[in-house]
Image 1: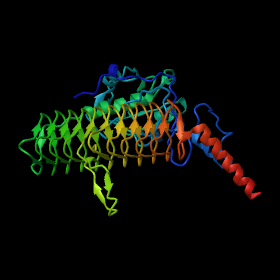
Image 2: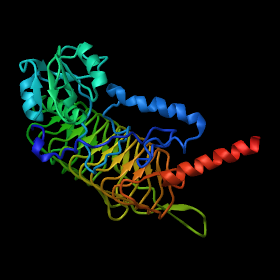
Image 3: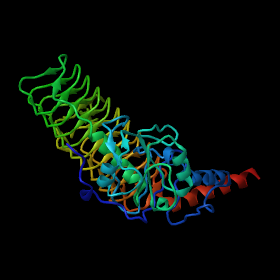
Image 4: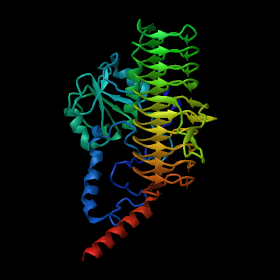
Length: 420
């Protein structure tokens, strides 16, 4: 199946501002205070200056959900699934047509992979977002460059694709190249597929995978080695399960879902009832379901629990990083981004467009309302409501970044006063 049409995917405006807000150990920049130096303790000010130079190195800003971006608009660029090394060679002319990009140079040049400026080879595509790095791209070994309008003028030694959003175009080019790869329908001889399972056309099932009774696997899906899919599971079209994924019974995956190695979907939630007379805990029933909608990506070794009596739901387009835990009865909205080592406790609700940094702890029955941003290592107490589209929250308990930075500065002043 080809990549989704470009017309169906929303672009950010050319004025969109991207700022990393989830670097572990440092509070994010306040979007309403671009200089933001007056709130910083003195020893962090040089680190802030060094951090601001980071944008000049696009290859260091990996397309990975572990680095969380703060968009001015609520739509996120489509993050490419998995790792891209080499695919079927495709001409730059075809790529330019797909991206609706202007092409300067030879359209017959063929590209088969993507890379950073430092590691690119002759058949690789790279991107730059500023004029300062364009010369580095031209000096690299890459076969072609995606750049912004700043590259329209001048003589170039390589073909250049001009687009208003180079990073987004690069992500889409990566997926387009990956989708040019295909595999024939095959079931490895060591795989165990129950006769009652329904496997569609053009499905690959790798070594030692186990497919139980009444499983349905949609066309174009790929099941990696050692995966175990329990009874009554539905896997949609064009899904990718990497090796060692375990899916418990009665889990439903939509179309184009990507699940990375070692993830566990549909395991029992952490629910127990204490016996007041003995002090012992007895297991509360965990008989609900897990429903994952289209275009969701779940990182390696993450776990998502089934509902206790109802449903745990992850809605369309959400991206979950490695080592994330989602508890039972959690409801996650559309286009949510959750970075690594975050834990979401039972019955919490995360609304559309929320961004969650790494190592955030969300207690039970919390509601994070639409478009809020939680900085890394934030803590949200039970039954708390976080409200504010585009507002960055930080600390434990989490509070708006302006308040957090003022509190931090006040603590630094008190400490300095005590030491005088």
